[in-house]
Image 1 (cartoon, rainbow, N blue to C red):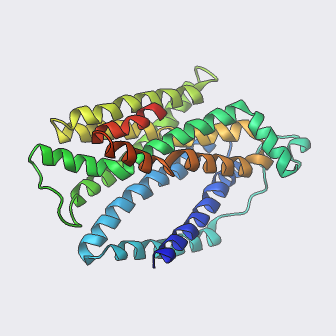
Image 2 (tube, rainbow, N blue to C red):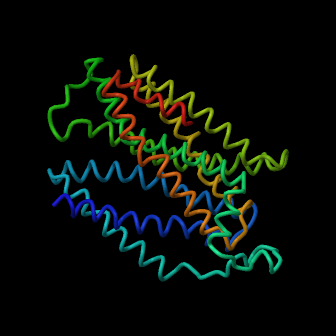
Image 3 (cartoon, rainbow, N blue to C red):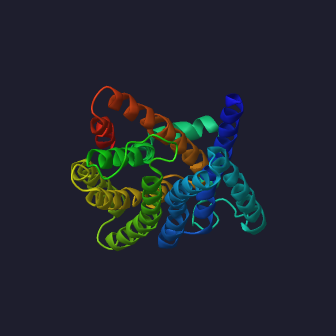
Length: 308
């Protein structure tokens, strides 16, 4: 039944692509300026929150039921509930209605013309590449960090060698909890820092993103230094690194809203989402595993540092 698992995963991807493409543009149609930044922060906080809850729920359900299949039977119910709530409560807003734009900027153009305009938009192109780098890092960390921390504890003789399906559950739970909290903290911190910096400079958005990514790269490197002697120290580095990494989510989306006209935003979000997955988390877990299998485990994370 592997084909059914692959098909189900593909259908989940269709739903994910649909809402992640349209939802930011709906927020852009409902709010402007600092209010839009705040609302985008709330929306993008849900990404690390859901990811962290996924680790916690998946590990807990598998441990309680004794079968990993049950971890995949919980999420469809949650999807049905949230989908119903969206249909009932989310209002339909006119494209660009809250922004003071001329009729020419609200006029629809062909898809080909939209794509050409986006490719020529340097702010959009570079922010999309940066989003891909963040996606690369989060995908790799989410897949391999719990296993790496467990192996580090085995070397320190504070944990036993993994010999069962339930091995490493504690590390997944801790990592998931950290991801949830740092997602909230990072998004709020990024939005607050951007709002304050806008009083000082018009380049606040890219500057805050740059500081966040450079800072996260430093602390991601320190994870592997700290893990050799202290797992607690490694978790502290994960906490700070993920907080800085997640500070970019809402700001990047806000940059897109500023540099792309309303009628092209859905296409822009879709293209950015596609490139971030293609160049990011679609291949990063495999690449890290490939490099690790042919060298030391920690050396496999070198591409993460390069991308960030």
